[in-house]
Length: 323
Image (cartoon, rainbow, N blue to C red):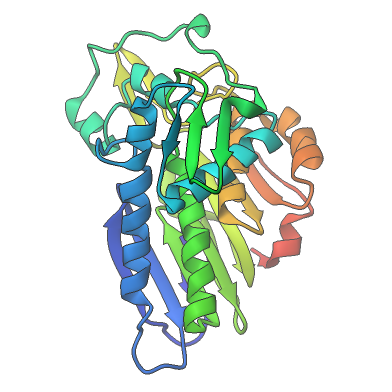
């Protein structure tokens, strides 16, 4: 996604975190942008606590912890896991946080830049349908808010990559508004956006699924979380097979449907991120009815393999103008 501000130029920052380029822009009445360092520290904290690629992270420690035993985690990871697991329940477990082991078996066992640098993954074997068992019991993750402990009742490992970026964008936007009085702002967490404005709307450009330099749609938005999933990005080879990072929560394998890209607008970016992935899993026909049942207030636009675009009426609830 591309974004631009209509009107005056707002102070902004760019930095790398979570193996992605982050961009944050905000308008404030104070002469200096005091919010910038806290925003950077926030993303650094979430990465430190929730990355499965860092052996010293809270998430890696939880994944190594004996199943059935409570593991104390930081408040940050605790809140992220609570939200992620609630989204799993709300989506009938199509969104599946217990895909860390499946991603490893598919060759995504290190940061994406390192996966590409290694080329094909000869040591990772093909994962058949029977190798993955979706976790569909609500008590598969148990939480104790008093002690900040999480009990993982499965051998499968957790992964919070995409939902973690969306959740982090929501958190950054929340304290920018609350603590620093930012009246118009944009948080771009590697393509997962949270935008708000008391004045001119933000123009969000939706990229062509196969050409990042071409926009297929522009949305003018005052207040929404926006996320795009694309099965053509973040691809790698494994034993001659092309893999991508959007796993079907039912099979643990890369999603295969007639949708190659989906953009969702929602009150929270983490919800938009999860819904966009599920649309790519289900395909156009099933996704339309599923979204109406599970996320009836979310807007979306999907691009099919044929190039056809499908968008719902709710898109206009968030977008002031669609070009």
